Image (tube, rainbow, N blue to C red; front, side, top):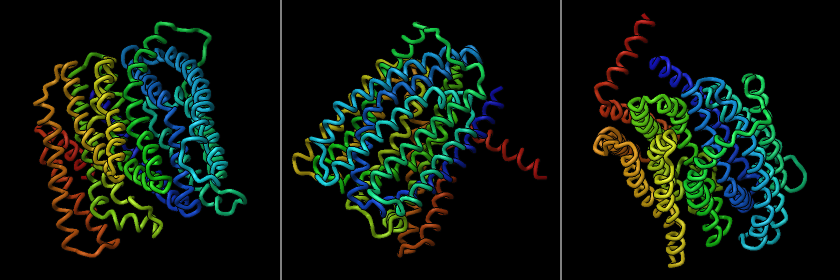
Length: 510
């Protein structure tokens, strides 16, 4: 059974990486065209307004993680059919949540955008249109969760990948037609992006209704499950608030307050680069997540912990594959991508954000173990306090006259502290050996970072000039160095698994 599950993880990972390659390529091109069409200032307006609206979506993010967890848990513990009550309860929760978020955004949110946000007076009208489109988009994203969570719980990664690719293609179509539309390009862009959210909702909901016939809404309210889901999501809310509101959009709003929309544009581009790199690694987390939760639900704690270790090391390794050459050749990458239209601070923001993301990817498997257990209180309180400290400390340093990059340096330091705190909490819940974690995860990740970075920097300095060929050579050298480093860090059991797969492939070829 374990072998079949591992094959399913490999298959789903393949689908997710095909999706990622296509989506990433399209999104990189889309960003360049949108930046050219809108200009740096309008791109910054779009980034900060949409980001501000997404802050209110932290409630949805928390509920989405809870819904996903309960789908996986019920399937692992009670089998197919047990998830019907999760589906019904999720629909009710998300509907109430959507109404609540609309009330919050149309009162507090609208007031902030029009009175506190640093936007040129002549772009206030456009900013308000973008705000309304973003609110409607968020509503459809909220109502999509019960369907997309079911698709992920049943590990239908092929369809999930297809919808993501369709989403990216539609965004590509928007940037192709955007320069030819009359009127305000920023307003039209917001309108068309909202339309994509509606189409995504339709694609997910129709698929669920056709493929999962047992998932039908019934006028039956399971108060016990409702309380469990709200309790889980309630504690998870602390962590979501810390990461989405404070670390993510809170920092973006802080930058807007001190430096304006042009620097927001630089932060938006840096965030997109780091998000693309994170997606490269997060796909493996997405593939592992259902089985980690289901293993825990079945009482197979040993496999759950081994999956967490494997998830940590593989996800970090995959980040190094793409992050190291991009960081070393960042000037060339930005010029190739955006030509000369590069906002100030983009280079330093991008590299510092990537470092913070690389640290953060190691925290994700720990969080998944906590989610699987449902023991959220201690973990969420401790880590939320740590992450929330980013905003006041950053504000203090900016008030003292430090530059915009200080915010990202502070974020990196806090992320390291958060990893230590997270590990200690996990140890207190599972009695997990910290020494084993350091040996199996931390030390290998340090090796996988240092050796390739040294080799790539040496190669780049030896070549000298930056060009497409330099980047290709550096990328190939890094891939080899990361691969060798990763193999050196494998334990004997992991090496035997890889060797057995190689033998199977060899026998099939021969």
